[in-house]
Amino acid sequence: MKILITGGSGYIGSHICVELLTLGFKIIVADNLINSHVKALHNVSEITNINLNFDLNIDDYFTFIKTDICDKNSLEKIFASHHIDAVIHLAGLKSVKESVTNPEKYHLNNVDGSINLFNVMAQFNCKTIIFSSSATVYGSSVEMPISENSPLCPTNPYGENKKTIEDVLKNLYNLDNSWHIAILRFFNPIGAHKSGLIGECPVDIPNNLMPYIMKVASGELNVLNIFGDDYNTHDGTGIRDYIHVDDLASGHIKALNVIREKSQLIIVNLGTGTGYSVFDVVRAVEKVSNQKIIYQVSKRREGDVDISYSDPSYAKEVLKWEAKYNLEAMCYDSWNYKLKN
Image 1 (cartoon, rainbow, N blue to C red):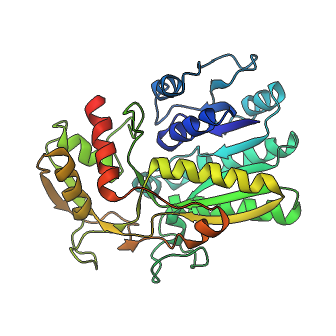
Image 2: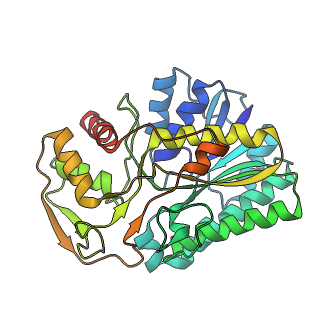
């Protein structure tokens, strides 16, 4: 079985690559490398002992093509060159802050690019897709924990993008129920592979909490900027459901196995069901790294919500999946990756 992974050289994508290659799948990674490094794929090759190929004309287990989901001609070449059985769609711009300041850019890349991909899939009769959505589609949901039936009310353009793409996939399935579709709404990924070879390594200044903390713990940055300490939480900082990236990767494999069985559309949360505040994460990192995290508090970021954590019970029911790692283990693996990179 051959899988196309859009955005596959990124943080989550590289871990999914390891899972798929270890299980014997053939994969083609399509990525524009705007916020990722091809080095991650070389490290995937080292972890799995499977050579990385850069020639689309060769039928190999592990191929990388630098391209963009907005480039229809390039996508058509990929599908024309190989029989793609399924797509795992991770590609997209992902900064909440940037999406607020430049919503047009986000809509063009994330929404229009996704529609472009779906059209090419239909053109080549590839109708199996896992879309990596996000808990941001729930916005400032008042009910906790958040289930798949919670109201969708995104508070920023990034979340709106995810909801719109979900709607496109729902419409696609309603028009043609021969599609096999899984929409995975995952919460906040942290952690890294046990080898320390792949992890979260943003190209620019980190937008996410864990790589930001890691840069402070390692001395690359002097201070952690905490966005707001006036949230309605136990310590004033925002609460999120942090999930190990390896747990997320295994959730994608479980979803692929489920939707392969029959045509269907499923929507599933991937989270631990436990919420941790920013200060909870800071203390856990201090414990595993034995480093003092210096921080300063600034104003809230537009679009951020107070509390967000999942009800993971449906994932356990339909995917036979549940998260394995606790917060300390996640922080330990993040720190191990930082020390080795």
